[in-house]
Image (cartoon, rainbow, N blue to C red; front, side, top):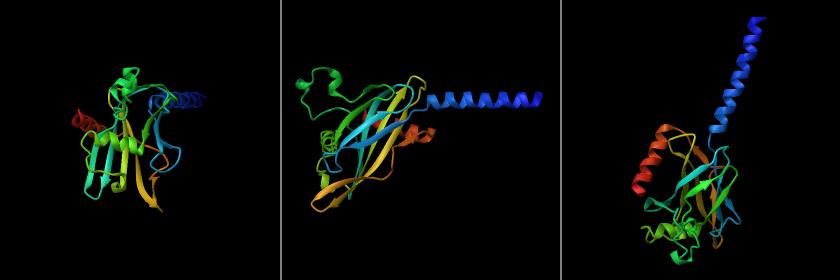
Length: 188
């Protein structure tokens, strides 16, 4: 009887610990809204139980000349004097559990990247790109991140976005998080 009681308590302990661990995991979703052409809007959602603070949004663009990375968190498509509050000048900031922020269209992201040195990149030159969201939480002192890859395909006269996966890939390994931190330092 003592062994059965101990087994029941071990099962309860496992359930409690796994529930607590699951609550601390972040889940960042990067999704397309609207059409699949260049006017498609990107949404970033926090599906974790804890709030996150979005530190940076990075765009990696692949062309025939190779790959380039740039920060696209600052909203350069709107003039500075048109921002009613400083919060509207950037996409950095807190996201509560279940909240989302619209980060712009493909053309908006490319325009922001062009303003930071992505000269001579036109949408038709882009073969693929990756959107990476880096954030921090109160539960963890290290960076949490997610990314999602897309390809640009021509369908008739229009360019269309095709996601390579159903959802964003959560970056959880220590090595990949250190790489994200290094990328963030280079963007500073």
